[in-house]
Length: 163
Image (cartoon, rainbow, N blue to C red; front, top):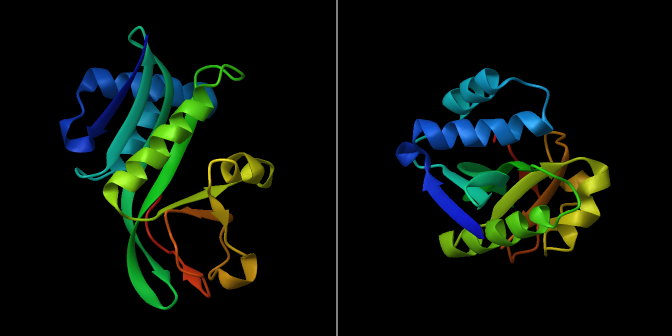
C-alpha cells in the first residue's frame, strides 16, 4: 500500500532523512552523505519533505521550501519545489508525487515555483503548472513554472537559496 508522509524538516528523523537521501542518490550522482550535507545546508526547520512509500520503501520524494520571490515588483512568499524524484521510472510514482505536491501547495495557500529542464516543461504543465515567459524573468533562471498563482506575471525575480 502506498502511503504519503508530509514532514516538517525539524521533525524529520535520521531514519527518514536516510530514506530521502537514498532515493535522491538514485536520481543525482551524489552519495547519501553528500545528499545529507545538502539538506543540512539548504533546508530550514519549517521546510517540508514529501515522501511516498510503498510498504515502507521510499518510491518518490520532493521538498517544499519557503522562499521569497519578486513577482510584479513585490515580495511574495512562495514554496520552491525541489528534488522531485522517483525510485523507478514508468510506474506512475512521479504522477503521484506531483498530485501530492499540488495538494500541499494548495493547503499552504501560497504559490509554488519550480525550475526544470526544457524536456520536463510539458510534464509539469499536465499538472497545471504554468511556464513564465523567459523575457519576464530576471536574472536569467532555468525554465520557471508556477502553480496556485492566479495573477498575470509581468515580472519575476528570484535570487534566494537552493531548493
